[in-house]
Image 1 (spheres, rainbow, N blue to C red):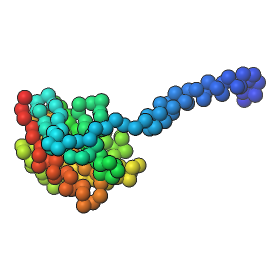
Image 2 (cartoon, rainbow, N blue to C red):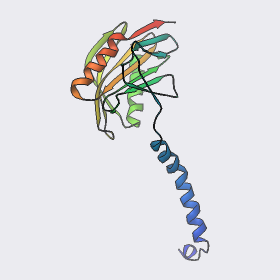
Image 3 (tube, helix red, strand yellow):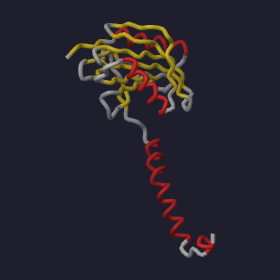
Image 4 (spheres, one colour):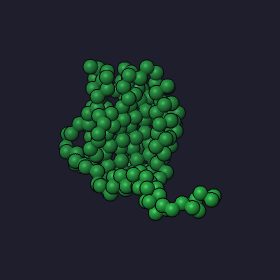
Length: 182
């Protein structure tokens, strides 16, 4: 303790400590303050995603905002007010649906997204899988989704929003889902 009391350069030490803390928080604050770039989905517009084995397309929700993403494996759509949201994610080269599903759930949990399988099976246009319920506690969003598998491709489609809209939005997208082998 004697060394701390005799420390003569307290101010520079405090400034350095604050600078180190700021290197983490400043970019986070800036990122939250910058609005995400979006485009409005037009009539007959298709959502498109690629995996190593499939070209995946679906009817994008007309009039919704499509968020610009840095990744070709994730698409997000939101209504103007942000009350409803649809997230679509693809994982390529999945040798086993159950293993990929377990890893996917674990990763979602790390991002504070609780995903629980409903036990209800789903089969749409060659994709097979299971329905799930999803909660984003920080954002207080609840939703329903489907985790699907076809030709070594794992696909997650999750719809958030009001109770009466969630399932309708999910089913519209799933009904239009197509996966063509490359």
